[in-house]
Image 1 (cartoon, rainbow, N blue to C red):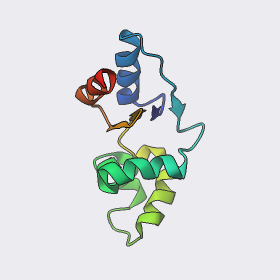
Image 2: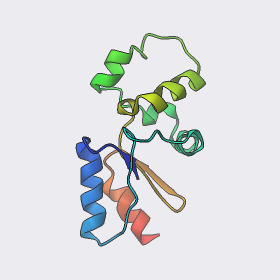
Image 3: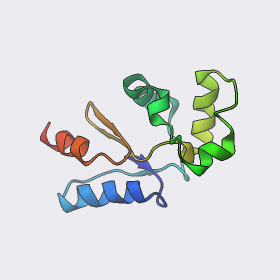
Length: 111
């Protein structure tokens, strides 16, 4: 699971898995950036715009809505500023979820 300790959605996902006694590995993106290959896996499944928190303050401050940049440029910016993402990014085997998605997490546990 990729998220930040300050993110309430990340804490909710952590709680969801702990209540079901599922061991998780949390990568705090403020301490360690997400690997480019790992991020590419989520981008490939959901698309870059689905990963971005378009309503968040970090997105507004970054001016990404107004910049003309390549997908690579946006990905580079996301790696250095994890607040731009809809957190948490959860991977369980081949199942991926983005954001607060209890239905997806349940499906991950059943699969």
